[in-house]
Length: 313
Length: 321
Image (cartoon, rainbow over all chains, first blue to last red; front, side, top):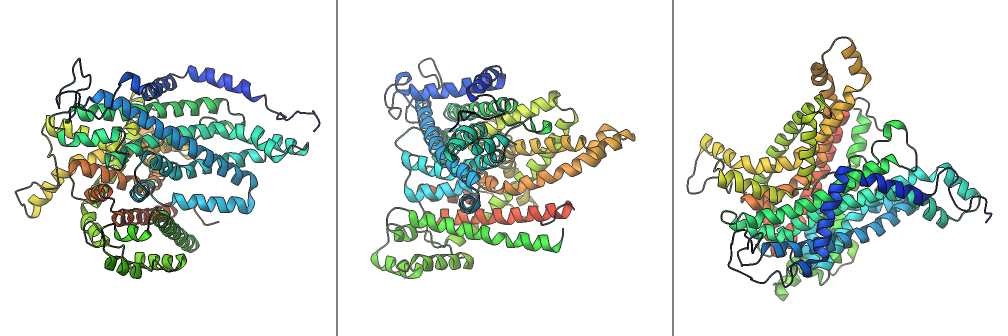
């Protein structure tokens, strides 16, 4: 292959440079930084769960239904378990689930979306039919059914949630690919003999990733809520501590122990809010530095209606 | 809205229904273990299993089973709950009323409230009210609805004693006529406000965006140039056209309203589908959960159809290409 352009896009500057600028502008985004801080809190709590709160969070450590105090920052629950410890371990569960689901769903979703968008034709049709298949069924109830049928272990949970999350990502990445596929620099690369694989990896993917990242972040926050709802209904993994389980446990003791409900719920809200803020900030930052120039009136938001809401889809 | 559009849109219902049936069928048959367990539960005896096997044609080839399944669904036979021993359709039909009441009132409150808040926010974009509304919405997205329900119960019911705590009617007293409706209404306030709160954020955002877009359009500018006041322009022109996206969104939110209702009902002891789903989830009662998937899925299909048709009726630009 002639070193004419050496694989770099004809009209656009190199990718790494753009990322550094984007990161710097993210650091200047106040809401984004707050989101980053909140998310980091959750990640750190999850990673260092055994350090911050050593021991089994399910064990009794004190008298039941103690109010928050110096020795038990968030009080104890009806079985004498420390609520703070439980929340820290719940953070680990949430983190594991989110990372697992996001990893699997991203790989599947991006692959399907890029292949469908790039190939077009009957491949596209089939893949899109499959995607639509999943989008016609209400996600929350489908997940309930699947977990009830397949079992509620953490592994199963991750597979099920990933299984129902990849279609959205596939759609989004496909539409991004469609908008990039016919651009001049792709045509130029193809005309100098770049293989499809090279085009996809070097030109298509870098343009799909920004939008995909925003959607992935939103998927993550949605998964936290979904996992919490499942645990709340008793369909979570009973061997690990989960925020949803804590909130459901608090139900019977609301009158006497407000801390059993308030703190776990706050944890969920903070984790979700953190990720939502981050994805909003990502959206703003990436819109400003979008590789593919869009008409002026479209420049504000890369992903329309980002930070869309709660539970399932 | 022309005849062609209506017909084409109605035809689109068929593949949607087919997908729902295919996906649910696949899920049930992909489950580990003997499918007979998925259909008949774990505690049946040989006779019962043989009966169910015959009924569902479980030893027949897959596509025959699918046809049996589809026919059963359309006949309203969704199987029997092996935990409760009753037909799934009956169980769901018993409880669907209160849930629809809850969903309906939440929908009403969130739509009206959302439009109002959106309009007020759009009056002065990026002004203090707008920012307050946006921030509240942002935080609101992050709150799990079942936790919001508990918070509401903690503050408004327990602390201040303004509202009853559980159920749909006051126990130990049976009212009739108007007193009964008033009693139900009193119990309805808290759950429906909580459910509405989780929806209102989105509606507000959409209303606000829609109104702002309309306010910037040519015809509104002309009207204002001719002397129409800002507020009148908002009310008489922008609002009307911004309602369309709101209506569309509402149709797609039925799925969320159902799941939100289920969660809120478990907190408030509302005698609707929530409790049914909760017990089915805990006892792994698949037929009921399958019934819920089908119910909500078909409701979604219908509500999307209705919103599309309504949209087409109101917006003369919609034609089927």
